Length: 234
Image (cartoon, rainbow, N blue to C red; front, side, top):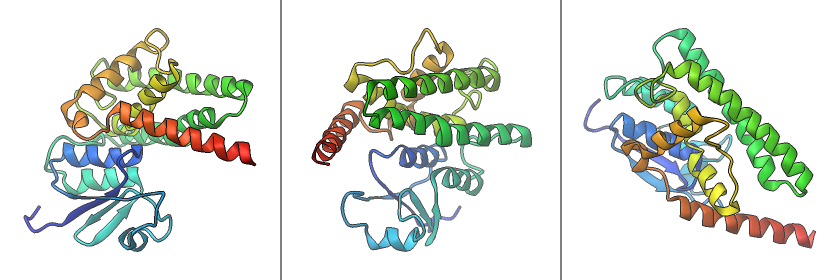
């Protein structure tokens, strides 16, 4: 790609879906300008112009052309800078289909179940929600064993599409565990996934873009305090 390329990322520092894009850009060694968006304040004009449908981050702006939705952006990065770094998506159509399938599972089933636990008002609701979260992790454990074929990541020897999708939530997961003194990713129940998570977070590419766990834990605590305060007044 030419030196005059303009690459800009609109995001929020703690957002898992923004982390996805940051990892993909770093894997492909793409230089970019980062613009922090305050989701609790007034949205900047550039975001509203670039993503008028959803009005949310992340948005990648490449040579003045916006690309929206995190996994869509990751695919765009992989295809646009295909000569730089290893491929993020598998080359075989069936493997690509599996990568997309499990990524949809993470976004549409597993993570929403985890968020339902976070906002659950009763212990019964929380317990039921955790059963669904744990069931999802067992399914992801089996998927990792099948797809990794004994290698380090879902994508094989290098970080791939599913790694980025699921791995982007790990800081949130670790922060939640630390804040609530609870165990979500269990070494005994999902040993392969547990080891994968440690490898992913220890990878130099990932370490350089993910936020600190303590900082995210503090944010989660503040968010839950505000939510409880609002609930108590209603």
